[in-house]
Length: 209
Image 1 (cartoon, rainbow, N blue to C red):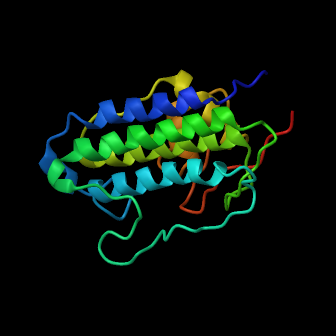
Image 2: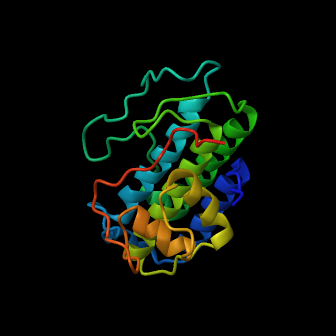
């Protein structure tokens, strides 16, 4: 079966879906725990924004394969990540950052040749791989945050399925893509398959043609 390629536009669609899904929650709910994550929804959004940004940052250099972590990713303190937002401005500020970093990933993956490679701990990846990471990172944490906020989060199958197939080639193909992605990332049950633990990984390296 022909696999649908993951594109930069899909990353932008994922962050737009997430922003829309989360922005309806009352601000006081952002202090709730973000589903299975060991933090509140504010920190989960910071985590998501930094993760998505890192995919553009890794792939952006002209010769990107060697990973040089020149940014201080853990500064210590209560909010150690390099990208944080002013919470006095409300959740909308953090969601705006998500749209921005999603756009960065989209721009970078669409301008790098297919031969480009950049490091990720779960496999040195090509531009499509980083696009898929942007989609999966966004939607998985959208689920976490939405769980904490008590809002609905059900992304369309056509957005989920290509990234699922790219990063989790071992995943079943005859099931609904969204619950399958939640299963693949250790966030849910899937009939007929053993639940995954917290040691799950994705397949970052390019897939065989």
